Image 1 (cartoon, rainbow, N blue to C red):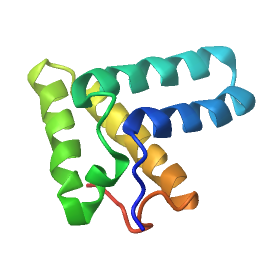
Image 2: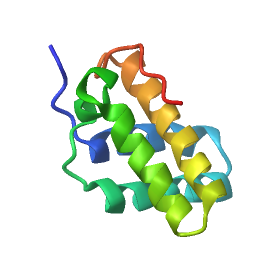
Image 3: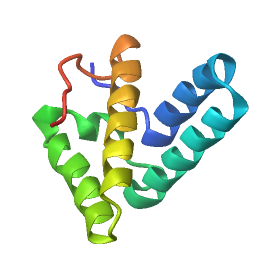
Amino acid sequence: KQSERSLKEAFNSLLEIKKQKTKERSWKTTENRLNQMLIYFGEDKLIKDFEIDNSGNELVYGLVQHCNAKGSKVQGHRLRRLLNEVFKHCSQRGWIKSNQKYF
């Protein structure tokens, strides 16, 4: 059964783990990047919408293109990398399929 968890729930779950394992500055940077993505995607976006079978790669590509258009290619790649970490976290919990890899 697919998860009905929101992107915000997935981000908060990952943040709890990162808060325990990383320095405050790193944790705050991660929190800020996740918040940027919540603004872009919306808090209620379901994590299952990001599965490749649901054309989730197009959502991720759109985020990277949005950053590129704003002149911030490096930030787009950072956000994509962080999203991959979120997807791995969700996969380990059984919230999404485990074969989610984005360019």
